[in-house]
Amino acid sequence: MGASRNKKPPGGADASQTKPTLEVYTKGGVSSNPAYGYNFCTPMKLKLSHFARSTLIIAAFFGLDKVLAFARQLIINNQFGLSYELDVFNAANNIPDLLSALISGGALGVALIPVLSEYLEKSGRQGAWDLFVRILNLAFIVTAALSVVIAALAPWLINTLIAPGFPAEQKTLAVELMRLDLIAIIIFSISGLAMAGLQANKHFLLPALAPGLYNIGQIFGALVLAPSSPYNIGGFDLPHFGMGIHGLVWGVILGAALHLAIQVPGLLAYGFRWQPVLGLHTEGVRKVLVLMAPRVLTMFFIHIYFVARDNLASGLAEGSITALNLGWFIMQVPETLIGSALAIALLPSVAQLFTRGDRAGFAQAVNGAVRTILALTIPAALLLGMGLRPLLERAFPVYSPAEVDLIVWITQLYLAGLTGHALLEIGSRSFYAQQEARTPMWAAGINSALFVALAVVMTRSMGAGGIALAGTVAFTLEAIVLLWLLARRYPGLGETRSTLLRTAAGSLLGAGALYAVMQWAPLPGFVAALAGMVLGMLLAMAVLWPDLKVFAQLASSTDKVEPAQTP
Image 1 (tube, rainbow, N blue to C red):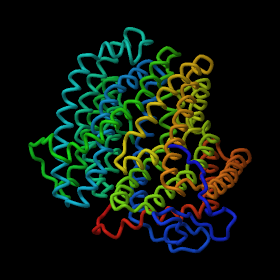
Image 2 (image 1 turned 180 degrees about the vertical axis):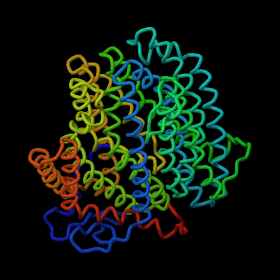
Image 3 (image 1 turned 30 degrees about the horizontal axis):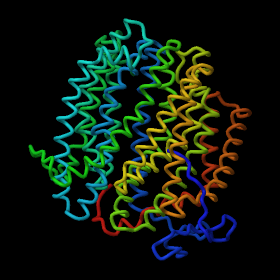
């Protein structure tokens, strides 16, 4: 999720050349063979690689998920407003989410994919599933046991660590919600690994659908379980159970069950069969656990951000946690569609390239991913930041002008780090593809310490905005460090000069178009903002078309050894 360093290799391509290429270092020296580089000027037939197709499929379904997530945010935020009740709901999720991230949802899932990819390459699918079922059983047992411990410690965790600034009544409510949320986390201990298993097989369709179903469960909770009076849709009154904020948590639990259910047919189709085995001493399990250990610390450091954010915000004005959460969500929409989608599809491909010893292919794939991130996220952040206010005013009429001001300010500070967040996904997964987790661990540890220090200082003068800015600075610096270290190992990987020049030009062109539409088009404010952002992004993409052509061919060398599969 960060920016790359533009370290030009000796004799490397210059942006002013007629046919610039990325020169990649191999064991024999520098290769100028166009097969190992990018020709931005020669016309090319756009036949998408498996990686590019997978990225687009993931992005498409993530887009559907974000539409559903936005609908969820509309319903919940207009129902509860910037209130302590919604602050409690958001804060109570922190420790359960940390548990999910440390076990199946993040640390173990990411550690598992490279090892499964290796088993698929060397031992076939049956050997990979034998390893998978052992990891799955272990994750479920550990998650269930830790959930019991967290439920018992919930009062202390809320009072001391999560939200010490909450009034006593809100602390009691937070304990109740945290304990309920642990049910969903136990379900995710299976579902998160199901995603990893399918992605290792380069099947991305069902894992991409799963988050959308998770949102549908939460929307059901917001529309049916939580309200005290019925929602009327098309003249029909929906059932209502009057569960209040508790209904939102039960919607989370329902969403987690749907998240798992959609993936089970995919596992079965690829030959997975559950068995009651553990085998902690088998080579594959040990390998995953060794790789997972630093990843656990990495995820712990990452989630310090959320814990520290809500800890600091709990002592600020009512609604501060909700405003920070909403600003983060808005920034995460383009980050997920671009950074997460590309990085998820990238990991199995670059892990395969690394297993083969194809250093040139590895460098080319990562460099192309970095260029794509830069080309898409910089104009997206600029345009969204400019057109944000009329969209928020239209979407959340319940908020006062002062509350809209707060959310706009926080979101713009988050958007300043959009490119950093997206590139950090590429940088960290590139290390995991090499089955090396220690470097991202140390980078995340430094990031968390830097964030806490900056947030404590900035919050005193900037309030909630200081927390957002501190996160932007810390995560962007982490990404820069990781990509710089990768570029030292793979000379040429960080060459992005020509892309940055095109991105600057395209972004300015798009911003000018958006400004003109918002100022002079005879349209309602929010319509002008939407139309201007679409026009601005299209103009930026026209300038950045050479980089989008590179994306279409990324990791195409890994297509040759894979049997024909539907992504």
